[in-house]
Structures are given as structure tokens and as C-alpha cells.
Amino acid sequence: MVIEMAKPLDTHPQNREGIPDKCDRYHGLRNLGETCYLNSVLQVLFMTEDFREAVESQLFAKSQDNMTVDLQLKRLFETLRRREACTNELISLKLGNGNGDAAEDFVKILSMVNPDVSKIFKGQLRHNATCSAGHMAIDEITPFWTLPVSMEDPTGVDNTYSVRDGFEKFFKPSSISGDKMYCDVCRDKAEATIACEMEHPPEILTLYLKRFKVDYRSTLVKNDCCVDVPHILQTENSEYELYAFVDHVGSLRGGHYTAIIKSYENQKWYLFDDTKVKQLDSQPHNDFTTSRSAYLLMYRKVHAPDTVPFLRTGGQRDNVMMKTGKEDMYYTPAGRLVCPFKWTAPEAIASKKFTIKGDVWSFGILLYEIMTFGEEPYPKMDNIQMAQWVAEGNRMACPPHCPKAMHEIMLDCWKKEKCDRPTFKTLQTKLKILVMSFGASCRVI
Ligand SMILES: [Zn+2]
Image 1 (cartoon, rainbow, N blue to C red):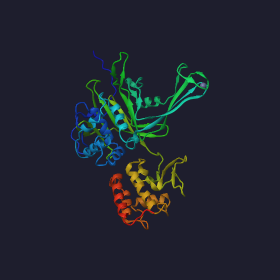
Image 2: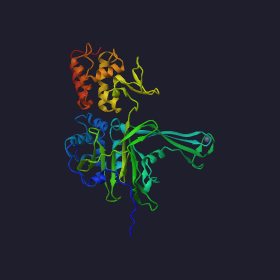
Image 3: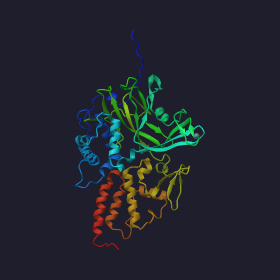
Image 4: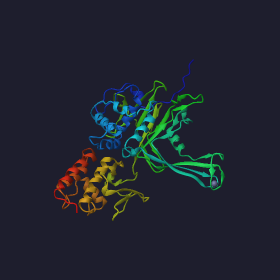
């Protein structure tokens, strides 16, 4: 008689979907011979709103060397918006690491692009070591692109590994024995406690599950144990929401990478498998996704948990305290600053998500301040009056002495729909043309 052990249910949607069909909204990337690791990572980057916009808004001189990662990424993204694309040019820039490891390539791309483009993925850790007498012997800050999550001790039922536990464990202080650290104050070797904390939480937090490791025979092996992937991850000061998985399916040799990504445009989940892209029928909706293939996990920071609930509840101000006057800032009951209200896009306030299109709104306000020689926006309104007035579709009028064309740029920045607002690239072009047209009448004094 064969007794079958109960196996944990795999709730990862990919495993239930089979081979994907065509998708009209998003397009695939051709596999140029085991480039699935690069394709998966590029799709995640393309589907990360602020990253995509930062790549696309970069300006390149015509004479500029074609062989920069930024320029090639921009071209690739432009193609991906319309049709299937190819990564030949990127591969020729030696993006591929030869090992075909998605985690290594992800880091490689981020460290090669313009730092302004990749900054949303960059965090900082503070490491310190304190001797048993309480002297701080090491205190240093290091940047990171991904945080490794060790998969040494499965804790759940049927050897399921909890990503949340692994993540928390990363920040737990640990002791090191006396022969490993020297304390300058004690002037001796000392036992110490080492600790690590998040100095700067990145906008996008990427966890990297250590599925691949070298075993006692010095052979690289894959750990395909089942993991519980939480959709919400809480750090000391921030909350993160899962929006992408890079999966490694199959064995170490002959394995394959795919990506499962939640679209920021329609909030649906899609599977990207080289040229195949498919909207998933079963949308992950539980608190956890169980997976044997999750390898990289991307979480987006959820902003300001207590931000302006009155906007959604029609005027109740219970949870917030307004501070009017010069600062016009927004505070939570604990006194924590949330955002400069009159400068923030309405959807950013309502959704707690700050995007580059929200920055465009704020840029419009900045233009207003410049054209009024530093006057406060919405001068006769308090924050709540302003929010209601703007929600009704009103916008600030053209200031005296401000060219009409400049006011039109402001109005473009304040379009209700995010997607109707210009990109920074367009703004740059429009402003340049406008300022050049002043040229004839303006002189440098
Ligand atoms: Zn000491």
C-alpha cells in the first residue's frame, strides 16, 4: 500500500495556469538562448511605474554613444509599449552575467543605470557591533539593492518556509564570540552583539530567497522548499505591498525563469514567460501566496498609513490633525508629518502612493509659485477647502504677468487623470520652447 503524504497546496497562480496565451495589453521578450533570467527582470523593471517613467524621461543627445544601458533600456521600453521586443543590444552591453542568475542580473542592471533612475530600489542598512561592556565598536551604513532571505530552517507545516520569519530574522541581533572582535575601548578581544537595522527603507524593497547554495561537497544545489509569501510586509517604519515575483521553476540545470507582476495600470496580475504574456485568471487575493518557485520578491512601499481619511469619508477629520498657517503640512495624531498638502496630487493623498505623475502635479504648483514670485498656492483656502475645491474640478487661475502658455503647462500638470499629465521630458521641451521665446524680450541684467 502506498501512503501519500499530504503536500502543502501550491497557491501560486502560475502552477495552475498552464501555457499562457496572447495578451493584448503587454508584450513579451524574445528568448535569445537562455535569456529568460534577463527577460523576467526586465519585465519587472518595465512594470515598475516610477522606474519606467524615469527611464523614458531621460534625454539623450543625438551624438550620444548608443552603447549605454540607459539609452538601450529606453529604446527597449518604447518597443515593449507597442509590441514584442528583443534584448540583443542590452546583452551586447554585457548585462548577462554568464551564470544566468536573475538576482545577480537585477543588481547588475540597477548598478549600471543612472543613479536617479535606480534610486527607488536602493536602501541603506545600518550595521553595528557592541561589545559586552556596551562600547559601540562598529557603526556603518551600507547600501543594498536586495535583501537576502536565508531558507535554512523551514518552520511551517510540511517544511513550508515563512518569508516573513526569514525577513524578521535578518534584523534580529545576534552574538559573536570573543575571538572575533576587538574593542578599542576595552583594549581586548570581546564578545559582541551585532545588529542590523533599516537606515533608509527603499521605495521598492526586493527580497531574494537563497534557494541556491553550495553544499558540503562544494556543489551548487537548489532548495525548492515551499515558501509562504506574504502580500504585506511590515518593517519598523514602513509597510510594503507585494507586486512582483521572479520565479525559478525546474531544476538547477535546465531551470527556467518567469515573472508574475501586478499591473499598476489595472491592478491585474500577469504572467511573463519570455514571448508569452497572459493575464492570470486566478488573481492572488489571500494574505499569502504559497510557492515552490518564488525567487525574487518585489514590494512597493505603501505611504503614510493615516493620510487624509476625510477625503474618502466626506469630511470627517477624526484621524488627522490639520496644521494650518505657514507650514500647511499634514500631521497624523502622533504628530508625524505626512505630506505638504497643497503641493500633493489628489490621488497621491487618497491612495497613499506617490508616483512620478504625482511629482508632475507638484511641479505645476512649483511653476505657480515661481510665476507669482513665491506666493502661497490657493492663498485664501485652508487645506480642506482646497481639497474640495480641487476635487470639484477647479484649478488656480493664471497669475497676473504670467504668460498664458505657462499657465497652460500648469493646467496640464494638474489634469485629473494621471495618464493625461505630461512626462517630465515633455515638460522640459515645452518649457525650453517657452523660455526661448522670451529670449527676444528678456535681457540678462
Ligand atoms: Zn568594549
